[in-house]
Image 1 (cartoon, rainbow, N blue to C red):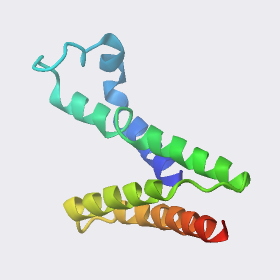
Image 2: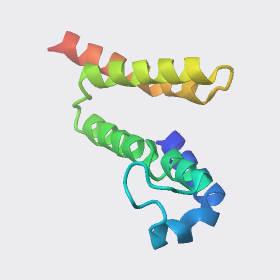
Image 3: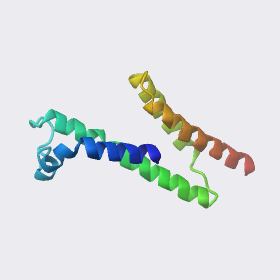
Length: 117
């Protein structure tokens, strides 16, 4: 959740110059329409990217953990695969390596739940 919030805050600050254009509809028009490249990249980097879904996943994981019900193992595996791909593509930057931590925790919690049942 920290990663998602951090990306959202950073994206809001760095993409602030594009907000008026987004509200005015400059990204509308469908595929092939002429759009400002940096505005489109800024949009897909944060508000249209994975920050909000990752925050929701984190909140879901916390809520389920409080109920004693971990997320299914496939969530950890999918997150691990995404993190590995992102880490490979962006190496040597470290951002995606941070995603290995929650992925491993999801996998461990799912394993413990499976062994306990």
